Image (cartoon, rainbow, N blue to C red; front, side, top):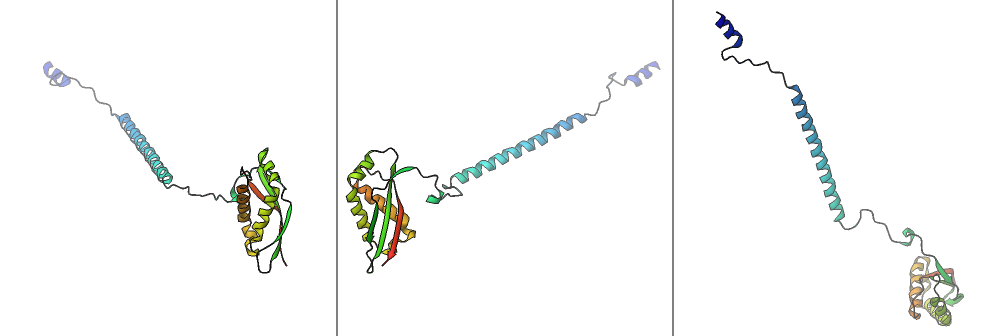
Length: 181
């Protein structure tokens, strides 16, 4: 009997197995790793979308907002030294009924420049005659305020063509009056 009792307690083979504990901690780690993986995948997706968007934007060639390069939007103009060498000039337009023009022109050049003012002085009377001819070739309609920027540029180019060193950088009108006679 004692054998039967032993067999029943130890079992058939005599192996005793301890009861197993439930492994609840392992499933928590798996869930945590799954969420970390999802978060990492989202970060990679966002970075990829941003990179693609930036490369498409950069290949368009011009920026989305364009800054006009007109005089109103430019940075501060450089400070030039100005000469009143030409003085006040009076002439008439090329109209059938000519208008009287009175201009006082300032010629701007780089500060500290020595050669340009000397050359302007040596060609003073040629410059006065050239400016006078420029205005007498124009009609009063061509001298309206909306054409002032163009007139200044044409005068600057005309004067620089007369100089050995084209150093006139700016033309300003201290006075610009047109009077119908």
